[in-house]
Image 1: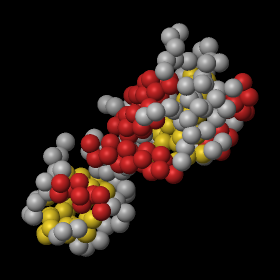
Image 2: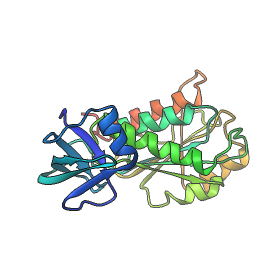
Image 3: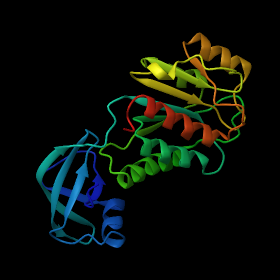
Length: 238
């Protein structure tokens, strides 16, 4: 993996101006200097190799000298939907889902969720996604979305070919992981799990139950384990 420092911007311009928190981190922590080579990403899957031309007090300027397609992005569209967890557990789940190559993360509220979302928390989750993307060398920082109802969350992945639903009501796998292919949605509940009504709703909307063994897993363990299993079965960890 390239050792060049990685930055995310909304849009590629010529020249590029990096300011705000990205600038402060670049200068104060990464010690970026004039004439250093950096990688800039705009979420398109392309990596822009840039030269740092000048450094000011509040921003630095860089110019693009080469581009290349990212070699780290998964080919398959996989989305994780997770009930909002207590403390910093959701941050851990977001971080690991990004590292495993998922394209999108959805956090939702459900009947037995005991944690509550706000704008600052959602912004923090998206920051965690971006930081994880930099650390693992991705060119896309997966967006973290939030839905206040379970039904809205499920509707947001109606387009997915495979819809996997992990909950305590499952006693066996209704999905053959051996032939899994194509876009996939993974649903895992919060610490309190799902109600029978939520289970029934997922079944009505075409989701298939997933059984994760006889042992009781923490919600964050279930998320990370199922993401890893799915990405491996889809050939994205080879």
